[in-house]
Length: 251
Image 1 (cartoon, one colour):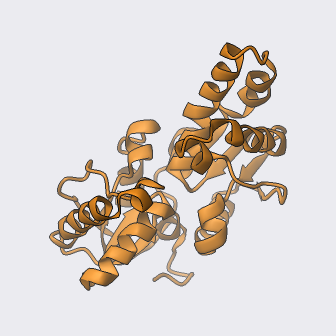
Image 2: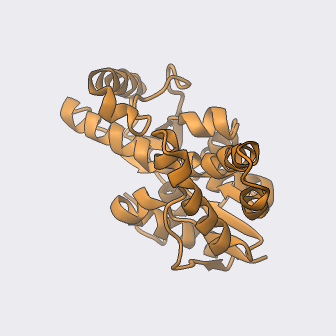
């Protein structure tokens, strides 16, 4: 199986350790991971802000870069949801506007083979115990795109429960949004900050040392909120937890 890592803009710019963790984890599981250097943005930010036509060239580039792979794995529920949910919409809208089938045809091959990391582990590799060791009390925040867009369900929790040394604490109000929402946080900063504070208070009530999620953008938002509130917790991407072992450094 030819597998490619789609790192995403946020991880490439701000959270490169998350991408390294994905490669370390998949390599440990016997997967040979390629990183095509031609990858760029999936177009999610443009699409979600109302610039649909500007997102189209980025979607076509994504399809071109990853077309030859059997699976594309990304440590981002939101970007995986962009490909799986919104690329088909881009194709349909182009067809409705009389621009032919070319866009839909270009995007269709990559849609079913793009996976968020926990989906790939559980559904494709058929594994929940990845051999990880992480001796911390952790609570998991299911981000909106993973929860509602991809329907990740209990996949992340099953993976976390199998990690040796990890104590998983249930997060009150887990299904509530953290308030990031991409440009929502920019356009509605007061509402976004209040939602983030509610989420952090809920996380702090669990007594966890670590707040875990599968989207670095939400973790960035919550990490800033935790720092301002002096919550005494750390935001950690699930990939970094699953990549940790007794032989490797863990935070």
